[in-house]
Structures are given as structure tokens and as C-alpha cells.
Image 1 (cartoon, rainbow, N blue to C red):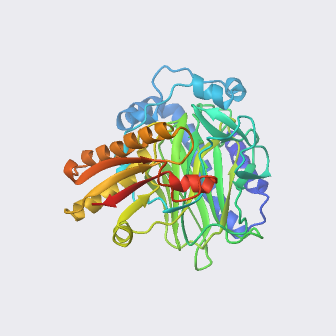
Image 2 (image 1 turned 90 degrees about the horizontal axis):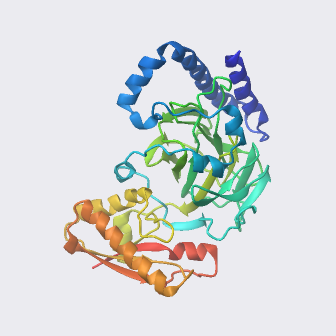
Image 3 (image 1 turned 180 degrees about the horizontal axis):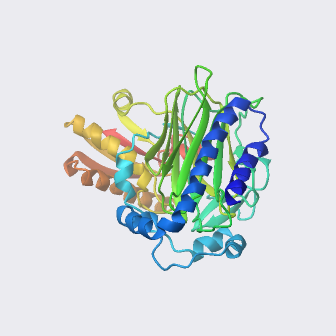
Length: 429
């Protein structure tokens, strides 16, 4: 009975889509999700007899993926009544694995020129996010785990970035990044279905529903924390689908990164590459949809940027490297883990060119107090130098120099300009 209810829910997902896309395209993706659903139901049935042995083995091989023994599970009624803020406050976080090492090995390269950035700093709680357009449903700004974020109170809410040119803003090379909230999934035998569901849809044009990619991120299983499934149209016109699973700590923020380079599409969760698609058709815009869950889906720190130029080429052309891939906690000099991919690339460049020396310069926008901005940029540039030294770069090849808000490269009166002014520069010495 539960299996049929699960499969009915998955089928409903496909029928609920209001986009008139190619039937074969959705059929392939639907089959992938259906197969995953069947496996989930089968696994839950087997778990009844193998639970003790399975948990003992899994806790040894991957203890961070599991809750501690003896923790009481939330009932369906309790879970449904909790707001995102309450759930974040009441549910203890699982200890995260060391992510800096993972990010340092990541091949994701953040784009050089920011097209869109929403850090949510100036948004008002309870209001619709000012930098987005609503296509259906309900979205609003709320605070989750201490961060302002876009939350989705209703199922099947769909939003898209509010751009000056809505008829196509994704270039031939682009990156998309955002932090996504992943909630915990109670071991609830009464609800064998997806508990949390995000969908990114990419379109080949602005006026029709000619979809070239559907990327689904779901958190439906207590033990496999996250599944990514995709269906896309290749450059040869074929409809292709795939899926992958990754274990992620629940009840916390996780970083989704996407890169596209003319035809190659890659997707990463917390620095780990999940999807590697070599021949996807070009997209010019995208939307984000929240499916069904426990009312705790949320996104924040969203950035779209034009594709990156190789570091050495940038250095030789400009005498410096301007990067937006190194980011910090708000108002602090704490380097975010996802910054390690870019910092590792700088370290690799310096190792390959042993005579190369850099002045690491931190820049802020003009928001806030100039004195505090100067102090913050001093501390941030020093923090980046510290990370490079930890990676084995000799300290005498580096110097830090905070520049505060004194050297803007764009208009601080606009969101786009402020985003470009918040940067780290590696200036050749």
C-alpha cells in the first residue's frame, strides 16, 4: 500500500508540472525518479529485518550521516506544525565533515563577472524578495539558522531572478551558486515520499517553454540524505537522464554550484561534483521551484556570474587576478569553506611559478562605515594569506593589503556594482 502511495506521489510530480515540455524528456526523467522510488520502498521493507546490523555497519563506515543513538524522532504532527525557524532552533545539527579539504580538491571555478547577486542583506522579513519575480505560489523573506533567506510556504512555488533583460541573461559560459537549506527526514513509515524537493529548470529561450535541463535535488531518505536527478537535451537533440546520491548532514545550509561552459554542464554539492554532463544545449534563463516538503525549503546567497578566464591568462593580461570566488561570513574575516577551491587554484599557480609573488588585496563596497570597512578588508586579506600559507606557500611570497572601499571598479549605487566591488585581488609584485 505504501509502495503504491509513493509511486502515485511520484507520478503526481510529473503531472503537476505546468510547463508544456517534451513528453519524452519528462518520461525519461520520470523513469529515473520512479526507479529511485521503487528502490527506496524496497529498502525500507528490508530495513525491518536488517535494521540493527545495517545501522551498526553504517555508523562505523559513515557515522556523520546518522543521528546519534537514542534521539527521539519527531512525529508527523509535530513536524508539520514547525516553522523553518522553529525547526532550525530545536533540532540539533549533525556535525559537519571537514569541508575545506573537499573544496580544496574541487574543480569548480566561480565566474569572473557577476551578473546577479542577492545576499539578502537589505531584504525585509516577511516581504517578497525584491530581486526576484514570482511565477506561481508564495515566497517570502525569513531568517533561518541566523541567515536571511527566501522561504517557500506553499508547494510548487516557482521564482526566477528579476533581471533587466529577462529575455536571456545566461551567456555561453556561466556559473550559478546558492546556499540551500536541507532539513532532516524523520523515519516515518506513514509517508513514503519525497520530504524535500528543489527543482532548477533551464530554458533555451525566453518566450517559450523549450526546456534543455531539469535538475532535481531531493531529500527523501533518512540515510541517503540527498539525491540529485537530471534530465537534459543534448547538443545532438537527444533527451538524456541520470542521477546520483550524496550523503549530507541534515538541518543545515549546503552550497550548490553549477557551471556551464558552452556545452559542458557540471553540478556540485559542498564542493563534490555530482553531475558531469559533456554535451548539454545552451540555456538563456532558469527558474527555481520548491516541491513538497516540511515547509523548510529555503535559499540564500545566490550568485550568477559569467564564466571564468584561466588564472595565468588573467595575470599576464592584467598584472593581477580579480576573484569573486573567495567569500567570507557576513561582517567577519572568516573564509567560507567554498572559497577553498579558488584559494587552492591560486596556490597551484604559485607552485607552478615559484618566482611569482602576490599582494593580496581585499576590497569592500561602500555600504556601512568606511573605518570598519577598512579594518574588515585588512583582516580578510590577512585571512586569505593565512590560508595560502597553510597550503604550503612561503609567507615571504605574500603580503596582505586591505583597501577598504577606496578603490571601486563599479557604481556603488547599484546592487550589481556593489557586488563587483566586493572582491579579492592578487596583484603581481
